[in-house]
Image (cartoon, rainbow, N blue to C red; front, side):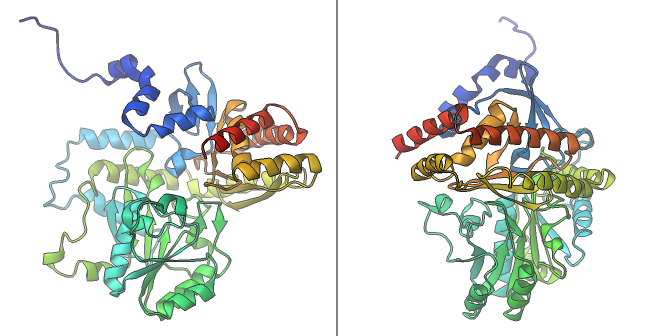
Length: 465
């Protein structure tokens, strides 16, 4: 029998041989609409490597990341401390996930997380943000004995069945009914909250202190007043900090911008992973956990197969250590203020630029109807085809001409959301503002490739109806 040499798995060889097939493989075996969408808007790039807040393509071109993997890459990509922690935990050959012991890393990460929310007592570790929200929904219902969860219109809390029930975007919900019998209220509408609570069947209100869709912040005083109303009716406040938590808004948690707010349950994920190992966490009060896990018979009444795994716990501990050592929260506050102020200063210069809002390094740039006749007529054509096309017209040249990756903040929104890695500083702010200014100059010139691309988007939108 012929000996073909040693057998085994060679990742580098596999990528060298098959890496160029990436878009064909996705088209054939995964979500076939993703490569189609990327090709349509010219985002079908091939990135070879990444570090910090930057990507590089095969030609060595540098791209600035203002998206951070939808917030996952809080420390940027491949932070050396997190990388070392993962190498160390794998080299340790721990007896992980035996299911019938108590490893130290989950307890150490829980202890560290809870120092940032001293009014909370216990943690459940899962694998994602939507799983953290599912946990909070289950715990709130069981602890209060009530069935209904209130959520805010335009909210995004995840896409699994329970969290989809409190997702305020119909585009995600359509076709997946029946969902849980939960009820939407407007963010900031205390009268609506009070009206629903009077029915006596509300377990909790789940809220993003700053909504990811559109980057809308809860009005001043709303969270504190909502908390008081909820507690008066023996209901709970759930803060979804999956995107806003871990320094994103210039505080460790976004709810901490408002004095006196102490949620009963807090959901985190994304940045806690260090960008490597999926992890989600639900922090809560002692009495809630003790009611759910009320006896030894209920010890596994809520669990996750990969929850508390050693790699995820090591990544989380390393992330929190880096955040302290490198003063990440302070940097997010400082760099966010600089970026927001410089962008806000442009609103008087460009009639298509209506508002810049947000906190820390979670910033929304909103576009709106211009005043001049020539621009207004073009804006009207775009809006008639599909709301959100102008924001897409801005995102595309930012990538194509300036090599900066951004995103539109939600379907049918004329808003770009900036959620870069929390490690960016003044050089990255300068680069983004310079590029954004050039794109706005082009948009207001009334001609050029940007509006040509806009006409292409209109034709494609009409053809897809």
